Length: 315
DNA sequence: GGCCCTCTTTAGGGCCTT
Image 1 (cartoon, protein in one colour):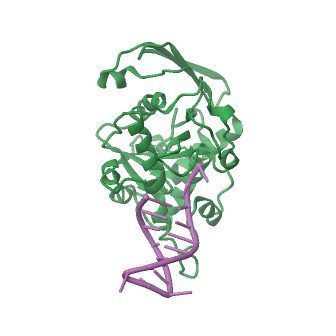
Image 2: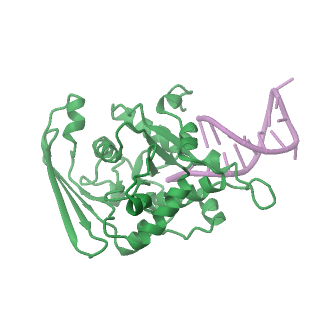
């Protein structure tokens, strides 16, 4: 089973069946949102929190509200998650990947892994000296709450706002979660998407040398252990295998050049995490089709945090 | 920082990520 075939089927199916899809983004955060199930496993004290997810039905345009309260770490916190606006939703509709055969025949396609395409924006390139300021992820399986994105308070000045448009005034605020406060939310999201006895496969462009080590450093800085069973695959070395019509390797395998190469529509502001995730989802679909890569192939190419942790420390 | 390529391997430049 190829990733492309799954996606293709889902693309067509979704154009005609949009009622159950929504996406989420963390819009507001009061310090300290921690998931009980996570922190209890880590021996933390708990405190009451309230999370609210607002989801708009894509079929009726009506809003639904989902609320839950948990006890975490002490302070009272609240977060709101709201669906994308209509233009964003159009992109989402074209990317949602749920099972066409399940709709047609009632037979469920057996995905060998949960595939999470993600991207980060940071204050710079050095994982030792810089910080993550935005995180976005999309579960290729699609369905409700398949996307998640949030700004992150870096607790330092943002000096590269000219790159991504994320300024101090946007993230250096008490209502924006710091990375240590974001981690439990992320873990909760991953667990909500993970299938029983199936691995989680994270996908990022240049992930091996940038996104994943950056995440590792942030986890370490917060003294939180990164799940050791997470698998990662980097689309950059895969893209470098591509050849043009003359049989020559592409001069550039950057995400932007790949978007141009595959004539993928521009999904909004480049260097914003969710836009780059959307682009990478399209690129991944094209890439796996062209190179005849299946999900098991991606799993074979995957690596773990421990593979990086044993490498030479960053200077 | 790590990887890839070549005018290389006893090296150096460019790409890729923000």
